[in-house]
Length: 95
Image (cartoon, rainbow, N blue to C red; front, side, top):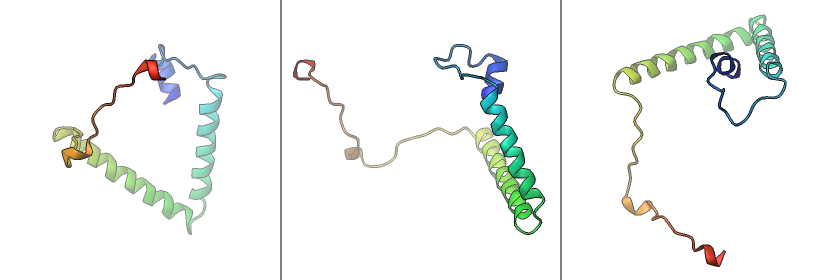
């Protein structure tokens, strides 16, 4: 995400700029590729785990697309109104 944001300019006005910019994301991607490779060459536990992870990602990606098409992800508070605490104003003279 950091690489894409920097390339597209989405992070141009961000208050924080990653020092040594491409180093951390590239090292992270290389480490992730190493973990995927190590799991892929292990046919007993690694490969089935990768396939299960891919299946979960595909299922929840499909769920996201279906929910988004059906009207989005509006969050609403449900529950008793007594659980919502009123806002408290601070008196700056007593601080």
